[in-house]
Amino acid sequence: METLVINIPDNKSTVVKQILKELGVTIQQASQSSVSDYKKKILQASYWSEEDLKVFDETKKAFENFNSPKW
Image 1 (cartoon, one colour):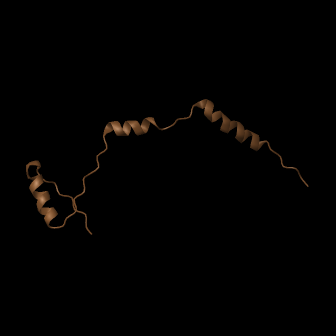
Image 2 (cartoon, rainbow, N blue to C red):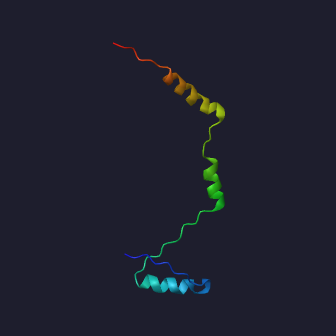
Image 3 (cartoon, one colour):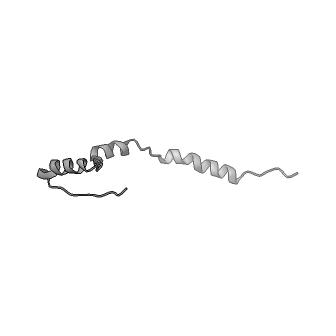
């Protein structure tokens, strides 16, 4: 199956869609995401403060100073 994108003038859109449907063409609506939808998704993203990142530095230092016992 092939995908074809056709730019149709607004005043002819309905007629062209009817003809294509009669020929068995499947018409997909383009999904358009608005700026507000994008903003909502971005606002749900988490961020880490410097205080949050200190835990990783402390853990790294603890592992660097760790000495395994010798048998």
